[in-house]
Image (cartoon, rainbow, N blue to C red):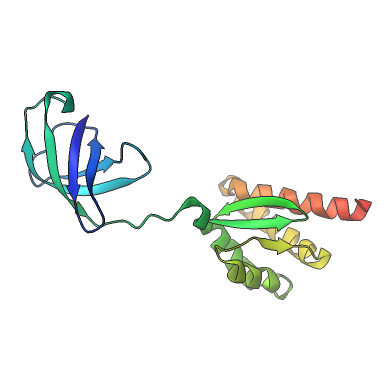
Length: 171
């Protein structure tokens, strides 16, 4: 493990590099010691110190490549409120759900709610008709996806089933 000083438009900080000692000009990926999900790509400009680890005083100097904008987790998720139960879907799954919902007149209101909610709030599915249309869409997706079905789709399907069951029971 070696310490990397990365200089760029969005960062001027120290990161950790795990790997063999890089050569000048080599592209590397390093992580923020305090936030391992903050990873940066950089090009090595020079090395100082010895071949040993950071403890021995080696330092990699690098310039950041392609600064990546990090999306906070809360903005990278689609939130559903189905009969009082909260379900989160990754943004990509929410986009796929929206595309599928646009194809049928019975689920276009769900697609509109997905667009309207954006990252600011949950998609509320309270109406029985919407729940029935959504469960039909989710069942069709489930039958055609096989093992490739995202777990979050199964969770949303379960939440809609539970809400419909509770509504029929009068709970």
